Length: 253
Ligand code: G
Ligand code: G
Ligand code: MN
Ligand code: NA
Image 1 (tube, protein in one colour):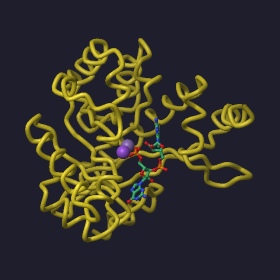
Image 2 (cartoon, protein in one colour):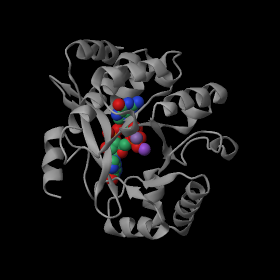
Image 3 (spheres, helix red, strand yellow):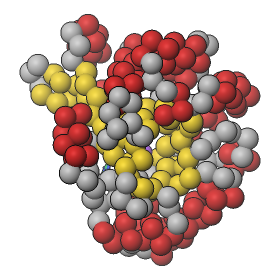
């Protein structure tokens, strides 16, 4: 509760910032970035979302925080469109279940796009399996409305949730992101490698691109390239960065 009150104060005081982690194509070009929120706490320094997102989700704070993230990511996306070095980048934004299942979620996202001037076809929403499997009819309907505007969807942390293959094909998803636990296991255990192989095959069968998350070593990168993943994220190329550092990185590519 103390953390919750502190977060309310932080929202008013504008203490949240977005970091951006590159999403890399296998040819070394940057496909886009994933926006990841951080809290610049006046006393505690940089606080990880692993600590405060669950608290925000247990209160209603995820709603204003999620709205702030969406607006800030779209504002940044619109700004990047003005520079040829960043104009092609897509922006992925993580969406919590409480946010998505609000009745006005679709309108909120469309309003943010209109207000910021960001291109819908550069915005990708990342969602988890548990979010998608709750109220499947309503979920598909919302996704289709957002999709009609050009927005695309990624299934985040794939393989860790309550995967239901019977629902997966009904969802208009564009991308599967293989959870990093499988990427780590893949170069250590045969069973891990088999899981990556199966997810890539599933992505192909369902016409989704497949992203390897949490790639930290060249061995892991070579493995996921050989298995047919289309892109990757991970510390091997870059951790999430504040925007000025991201631009420096891009300038050096
Ligand atoms: O950035 P980091 O890897 O520390 O993120 C930790 C967790 O917080 C991840 O599960 C990530 O998806 C989540 N997270 C980061 N930023 C956001 C955000 O803006 N919204 C939501 N819902 N989750 C986020
Ligand atoms: O749940 P989601 O996939 O959105 O969370 C992304 C989280 O993964 C962020 O907190 C980010 O900092 C973290 N992350 C990104 N790349 C790596 C990596 O290579 N290794 C590890 N351990 N974490 C990573
Ligand atoms: Mn994510
Ligand atoms: Na993920």
